Image (cartoon, rainbow, N blue to C red; front, side, top):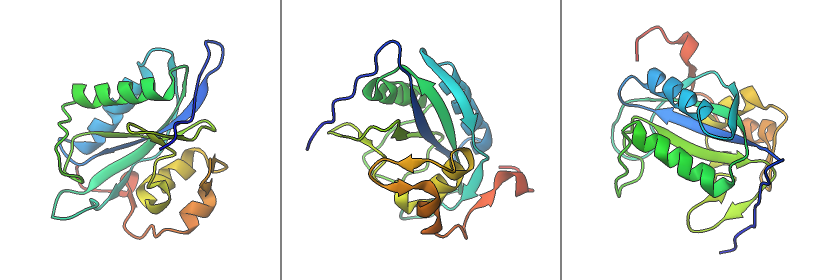
Length: 178
């Protein structure tokens, strides 16, 4: 694997897009609190939050639906430092990572896009490797950055047109309490 050298100097900030999801412990509240934690990161400013969407969980087995959204931040943190900060927020919010993928979780933070950078190493892949497959990522990403061109992947509008949004329901439209 190759590693793209990424350096963000003290004078330059980068725009990063963070996917946020939850399906345990009052998911809407979990997502909103995660946004608050992002806003509190050092050398970082929360710029925007997408609407929230409810969708069925990905993966095997039955589990509660997820609530997902995207946060946009301006940050001076380098990609790996930002990843570490995201993982620390997950831990602080009670996330326990197991060996199995696609488990229920009270919070999940994914670094989707970091400026124009492409990074691929043992810890981090940017853009997120499954960004083009997931309506629950692309719809809220489009809501906050409809003109975004995901480096090496394509325009968010084109990617969104290539996935089904049939299972997405905007949280504002949900009558029941999650």
